[in-house]
Amino acid sequence: MILKSVRSRFSGLFVIAMALLSNMSAFDAYAQSDSHADRWSQWQAKTHLVISAGRANFPRIAAWMLNAVNDQFPDAEFSGEILFTGSGYGIELKNLQRGMAQVAIPTPSATPYMSYHGVGVFEQANPNVRGLFRIGQRDPITFAVPAEWGVNSVEELIKRKIPLKIATGHQDDDDTTGFLFEEVMKAYGVSLAEMRSWGAKIEPMRGPARRCEACSRERWIRSFTKPL
Picture: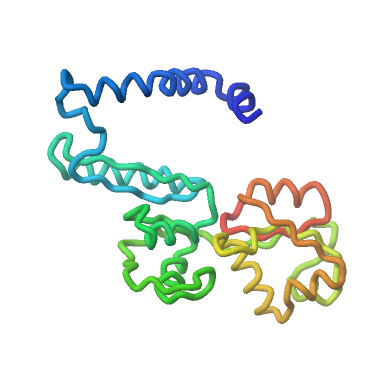
């Protein structure tokens, strides 16, 4: 079913990908043969960097970084991988702890701080984490509701105890959006359990586009880190 969906949307890419996969075993056999001992026999170079990059535009940033680093090395002495987790950014720092990656690109910028101190979505501190740089971007938590409600503040939503359906991130040990949403509501003096008690439903969803679509369909408030 997944392959059919990919084929219908990206038929050209699907054919190319399948062609590569179908020839991979033959390529590996050729690369490891005694008759082929040139520099491409092993695709991992002497220096190999793995970047854990979540989803959205973060894998693109990882690709730019790998290209920039590659320019600092002699030809064929550097290679890299982008670990596309498709996840909620806590996992990127955990991949550093597990030795699965050497660089992580998370959001928000407080995520490495939480990892370092073992707070928030991190149960264990990772004192070996170091920040390299921060890419400035307008990346607030945004709340949106249908205009016809006439609601102008979060306080008003709480006071009226509207039985909302709330589209936000997952409440797990990975999704920083879901974690931040819960913490923001605590700052307003209400827990998710209290909200559920007056009929609110917390609907975890990955990604801002899905949450915006849900908000436009029915009585939803949503929270996300990327303003749309």
